[in-house]
Length: 372
Ligand SMILES: Cc1ncc(COP(=O)(O)O)c(C=O)c1O
Image (cartoon, rainbow, N blue to C red):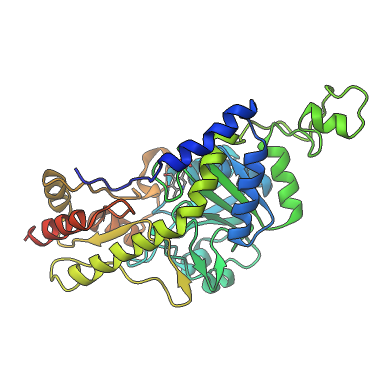
């Protein structure tokens, strides 16, 4: 079976673990500090904080921004469950809105339609790595916080600025299915020093910034360095040096991964464009760069499910990201969001990753073409 997702972990990553093991400190330490700095440099931000996952980053994002009971957060419906769960866990209400039928990104006019006096933020996704039309979003979301779920678009760019740095808080994922992969892991990118300071505390129990370990307190000349003070009651969302050592190696290779993904994207576009029963995805907007995380097809006319089953039966795994959140009963949404519902009937994501060989790509294209 050719998989939809893959990762490229090997000897280099294994070798990077040895010094961490030998140091006898595998927690949040030197490797994590360096990974944070190197990631920040690549993103053009001095305010990057590693977390144990993107889901944690999303849960932290709403808390850092002070979102809570009585507040509303606008979320595009074609999105990951962790976004809505983060909002609900804060006591606020997620308000699901529609996306456009080509990019599957939030429609700026939907922000205007859905915003009320209670709206505090828009939590957006750059679907499949293609950046949203941010100018229109900035206008529609004026006065609101912007949280970017950047799990699909870790190194995408909008007008030369990195996605994840375009709003107030950006949330990154390095989980087993992501482009830069460390098994588990994530990051926050903060839009101001104030938010950064809050994030440092909330990421680690709510402990005060410069007093998060006995060594910190000792260095600050605290007489009894084991005594602690809290700013808030939070959980533990830090990463560790094992993960960070892997991340530092992956970071050096990630441009090559994205280059290969783009090559495959271009082959798909060339080979699959023009089939009368199939709709191929659009190219990234002008002035943007994509991370090419998903390659999505649309099969209208009620044939998508048969197409998906046929592909899997012929050795090409495929899936649909993301089942619209407003259709998940638990969230209790009463919205009808036509585009999201249409996408949910027509779209499918086929394999796109750096480990696909030329032969794999041929097999996938040939399987797709033979469906009808
Ligand atoms: C869009 C999106 N956001 C967030 C996440 C959560 O990432 P993590 O697994 O690092 O918690 C995922 C995971 O699949 C995702 O697809």
